[in-house]
Length: 272
Image (cartoon, rainbow, N blue to C red; front, side, top):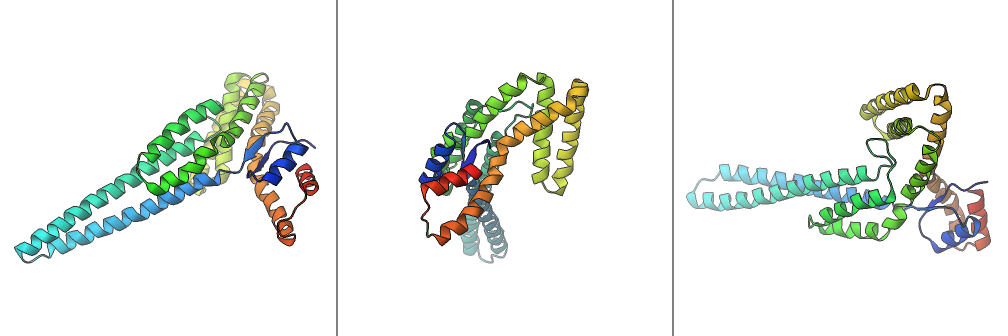
């Protein structure tokens, strides 16, 4: 048995059990669900923007139906307020949507040029984005960002693994061909997660970069491509394993009312 790394939360028992069994292995903390919480806030901001649009439309409709001059001025003031509120709500949604799109791209394992990202590179992209998001003055967003800032070092562990894999692969694979193979893996990975409209795009990109790499590597293509895919898959494999492990743990934890021994944890981590 070998350990590719562990993905879970920072529960004291899990940490102790895993470190006892695999003291030199990487721990990939399962905090990425907190990024999904940011998109929940985006949905809230979007709903408020649509509500503001409806209110502005209603204010415009009632203004158009005003009969007296006094009523006209009153309804015009109401419309101006609704219009400003609508503009602010739409601007907040647009800015937040753009920043979250950039945030998601900053978490990709590789750059658009096929280079695996480093911890320092990802950190340098994330921190300014966090600052810009908080500058939007959205209370819910600032509150959601706080635990992400706290756990940022843990979240960057996969990129530490990527740095080590990058150094290992560049000693075996020609650099330009490696970049092509990384891009092919990247698009294949996203192709599995995408809907039907984007799936075709990712598959075409994957096939294009594979063809480029094959042209450079010749007979060594199949062997080196399999090596690159296996190494890169090891980075993301733990994120799917954690749900399986949690699913196996929950019935046992429920039956023993949360009491689990250190020996049992060591065995679970060993067989994982």
